[in-house]
Length: 289
Ligand SMILES: O=P(O)(O)O[C@H]1[C@H](O)[C@@H](O)[C@H](O)[C@@H](O)[C@@H]1O
Ligand SMILES: [Mg+2]
Image 1 (cartoon, rainbow, N blue to C red):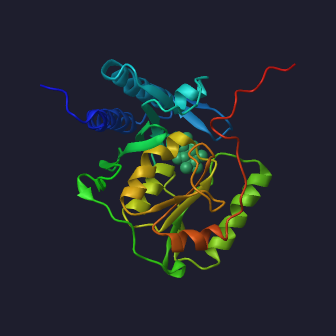
Image 2: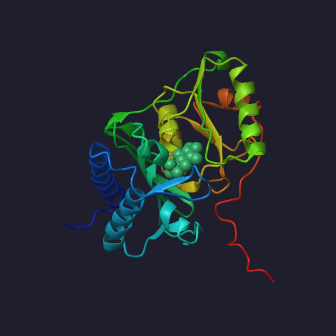
């Protein structure tokens, strides 16, 4: 069969297939109730990683390397093992094998297999597979956003007092960071808004914005692999992306606001404490002099 004239579509089709296969692996582990084995920690005692995260990421990367040998990767567990986290202009797969690892360990049913694809440092398409719900969220830049093939559209709500907001408590337990998280949460809740929710997965919170059930999601401390795939799902569903400072989203900054429109985004951003975590693309720690 001749190669399609649209190589990025071939890559996206492969991503959907391998995300679905990864989801089957995740469901099997959850159903066998052995996902709590081999739980390790990373940046903090509550930043978890399991053998399944690592197996899923290896499955995805090895399958891509065989079909697209010249492409690059940014994978959560590869970076955690020392791979660089640098987005060049080359075609790059940005992978979070299990977004919501803590949910996975606790059998809380919101885990997303996230595969984003960037060319010239712009996300071309994104796939987020909510494995336990069996919901495949997809979007291709300029061609719309879908869930299991049905078009997605953000909420039309412009009144912040009638909005639902999502955020997360993250995995940083530094008392000063916890204070900033609760300061923002206090201001947002007191607007008031209808409610605050958190799926336990940045990507699934963003998909909730895309499908119109949440008006805005914000968080500081996320990583590029948490948000890259879902970023194009939000914008192709008609949503907007911002930094918590109000500026343009910077995928490596570890700060994000995903909203249904500029009105809601501006109103909530005015309430947020702006603080920073180390950038994802920071230079590796220099050896001591
Ligand atoms: O589950 P992972 O891939 O580690 O990502 C989550 C992160 O661990 C949490 O700290 C964040 O609050 C979530 O938004 C991420 O989805
Ligand atoms: Mg993640």
